[in-house]
Image (cartoon, rainbow, N blue to C red; front, side, top):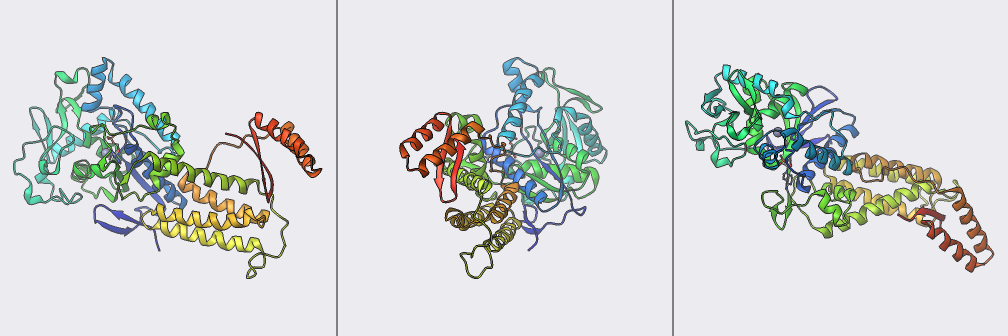
Length: 479
Ligand code: AMP
Ligand code: ZN
């Protein structure tokens, strides 16, 4: 089966065929930097990360652009409330956003363009729309005439018959479907904007939110590109308006595949700043939660299903991530038994041959599920089945070194997409501690368990633990 994505535009799964061979151009709506991101926002960024990692896993070269909205009503109000310049205000939250991405092991986009640095591009696009007669001027700004765009409503399946003719015009960037009407491309300056303004041929003011994404995506990805992502709340009006602006300005199809991530919920309601029911990553960490566990929790439910957040689920996610890391660590350390012994499973010539089969099967199934519109939940069951089988061999001392390597290669390959295995290089166990481990072994062989226990306690005091297993002694740092 080929790679398929559910396209919001057609409301069905479609085979993925990029416009230019193995090159994929992708745009994601990024944060409005007026506050810390909540973990609902983070779900949409982690989703994009898995999408991008999987495309790369499949051998595509991905150019990924994510915008930073650093000028809008919310950022202007925030800066005003604190009495600081807009940039000083947004800088803080922009930095926090990048910290969150890094804590969640999200691979950086190719480019993070800021809206304030692309107002010239937006002005050009608005001028085009004015010249084409799709936009018009009012006292308080420039508006887009939605009646002039035949396909308006195609993405959100809006009933065109319900559109009011001679629509009054919406100045706010966000509004409900039943308020669909001409929307602001440019907001004329007024006192409330203070020193935040740009001078355009059509007057002093600032851009609306929607034009930002149309102008910046075409600048970096071209007039037509492959994938556009966002949370489901952006389908209307934001993405509908992006299509209307871009296609009217360029005359070309804007985006081939629209992918939208469902909401993170709390007690049955969307997690949202406006509802006050949100947690930031800092809140989670302050309660002892762990960023990698959060990443795991957020990706383990299909991106098109709602996910209800609970701390219990976060604890479970932490246990799972720990067990995956522990398994990978044991494989890394596995010295293995000598190769060439009679395999456990008589239908194989050797254990390593059996392991090759296990990994090949797991890799195939993993890809099959991920190809099906990124079914991470099912792909994870493949990983768990694999871990269970491989663990049996490992724990009974039946795994040879080549098989351990093979198994580890599968885990690390799957993790190129999942991103939950520890990245930090292993801290070395100092030579002096290794000597103590050997001394303890020697004591045990002599039957001197008092001495063996004394050395174990000594090592523990240095933060090093010893575990005895069938594979031999494992030595690791306590943390
Ligand atoms: P904002 O910073 O409000 O512009 O939102 C940034 C991204 O987070 C957008 O793609 C939103 O669709 C998405 N988003 C907002 N709330 C949630 C939520 N509760 N669950 C998932 N995604 C969300
Ligand atoms: Zn956008």
